[in-house]
Amino acid sequence: MLQLRSFNFYYLSLHYSYIIQMNLYFLRHASAGVSRPNPVIDARRPLDRDGKQFCLQLAHVLNGMKMQFDLIISSPLKRSLQTASLIGTETAYERSVQISPALSPSGTLADFRAMLDSLPPLENVLIVGHNPNLTIFLGALISGRNDGTGKVAGIRLRKGALARVDVERHPPTLMWLLDPRIVRVLYLSSTKSSRRNTAKK
Image (cartoon, rainbow, N blue to C red; front, side, top):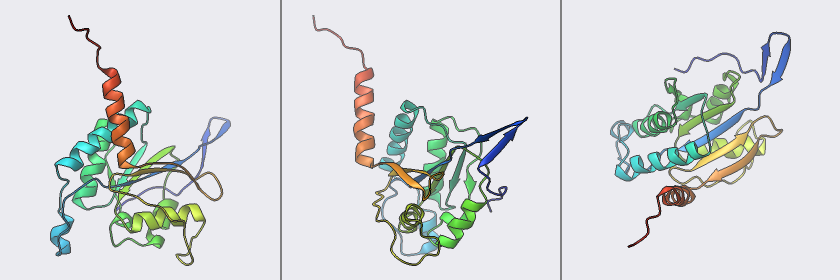
């Protein structure tokens, strides 16, 4: 189970105080084939070939953005852990991926809020999980709904979609969302532009 210190946006260094802008990144796991009726078997379902390839493409885009994560938290399910591990490895993440039941398919909004309250003062935190609860958590966060009641913001997270939320704002604000189709376009554009032009003789 995830064991973290009490959440605190303020970091004290010597006689100075710095306000840390905390960015929370919501990542839905990449493609993992067809779901299994048996939940025990489904929990062990791995990423498929397309899912693994997409993780490498997303990591390439994140590296181009000079993005580094201070903490990566994942659902305990295999497809989510593989997504988190691949992204972490390819973006030079130096810590171990933390596991939180709050991000599993059975995790509730109350579980998610408790997880957030336990976060230490970090700048960039990546959470990797599943739909529909990941979308519900994101929608509730940016709409200011804390009790799980009432309407929340409607967000579409395809498999592999990544959303950045600035939690320092009140209410927390969705800054951008990378749809998987956009990630692939960015990846192809960057790799194409990096190739050397060779003149035909």
